[in-house]
Length: 142
Image 1 (cartoon, helix red, strand yellow):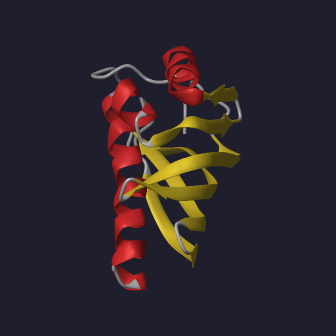
Image 2 (spheres, rainbow, N blue to C red; image 1 turned 180 degrees about the vertical axis):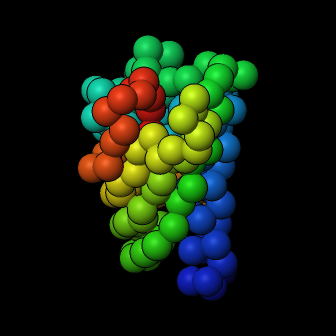
């Protein structure tokens, strides 16, 4: 049996993997971080199930290799474990390049319900609160 520290570390890995997939345009890989019936709730709509999440990401996400490049950073991670479920809150910020230099494209909070399925932590429901946004630039997934 894993310790609480090991479980929390595994959850943090999923949060990081999400950012790398999102920033890298890896739509299928990002959707695979959700349970088969998972929900991804964004400021630009919601996706349900992996196919629904991929479809939403295809409409609002930044394709791999596009400019300007951006990176999602996650911090202030608070994890409340309850057996094979967890409630997770964290903050995120998305800096990117622009013609006027580096800017904060957007920032906000993630509210996650996570479950452990077959020994792997996954998102059951991720709600994104995008409360800081650069209204001069393009809107992208967060």
